Length: 492
Image (cartoon, rainbow, N blue to C red; front, side, top):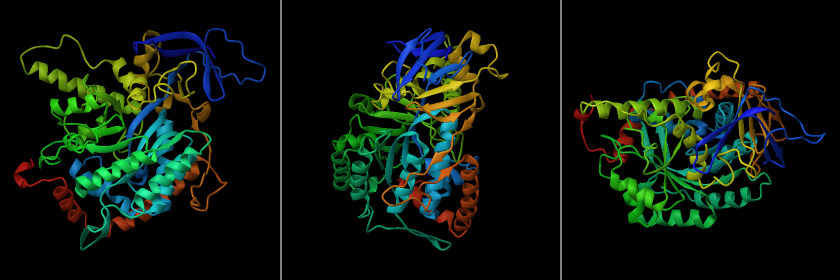
């Protein structure tokens, strides 16, 4: 192999092993060292001069949104919700399949090997099954989280209406339980089921019931959104406080964003073991507030969030996250008439949040997150021959990955020892149906060109449906749901 291996020590410091070998056997890393002598039937990958990194952890991603790409580049959080977050209403199950598969292949292309998928398109059972089918098809490692959110009953040119009588559909929790059982039988063990929950409007009793059912069914994590700014959360509702009041805080809780939280709220989350996932690209654009995941008093990690808005790659999240967090910190210091003695967060801290610290936040550091004997072979291999990687790889390979690399430098991506990207190209995938669902594509092999063609066709059909919807009506309902009671004077 003879690669430049990025190895974590017991203190999460990255040690660089140059001209190192790594042996994969039965999906796991069997041996790390120098001059390992493989068996005759072992495939040898020449990694001379290449960086060998742990795969990246993406702990918050709405993967189904692929067909919505391009429409949010100048949107705030308020505009994104009706134009993106709620558009599952205009997706068919087959649209969900192509969006999910396309989004996961885009993530894999950027080195993501583990994703927590906040699958908030579960308006009907077949949409959920389509998303899970695409997840299994992609080959990625995933915690797939069917999500309970606004149940849209009607959305047309005349208005937008929620199903107030069925805020928790009859099918939802039985399906979640069934999927937990079905996925547990999957031989690869790459996919687990979680729960997405943003339905705080259902009240205390129902919320507690749903959480208890999810935990009893074996959901690995329960994930929700939380941020406070002058619109979202402005009505005084605090998700950390609500969870604590309901007796639901725990180490299986992931709250995405956490921007605007008080020190007391962060303490609640840290004391309970709950996770804060930052998504710096959307948070910095959409007026969430300061990124929180770098804080030393949280269990932090990275997420891509909405690849309809920004790059799906965690490389991009690291780069934007460092820039935004450093800018905020430097501005605070300089506003006091002083100058930063050190630049923080550090490059290694960003790399760790995308790898070992991210895996630890998900309680998966015994399986993934670092290159270590006995762990799953989730690996990203970077070419270093491009202009952007020249010289930096000789000085600091971690800086080369975090500060200089792009998808173009990612040569190979492996999950559980299986190539999902090889020689710079995404590998073909074989469709896996779920519970009878497969869009008529069972036993079909798909290459990226085919997937891209289906995505563009699907995008046009979705756009035609969007054109029949009153987006402003939905926008007003979103503000009501966030508890916003102010007037136009809050906007500038």
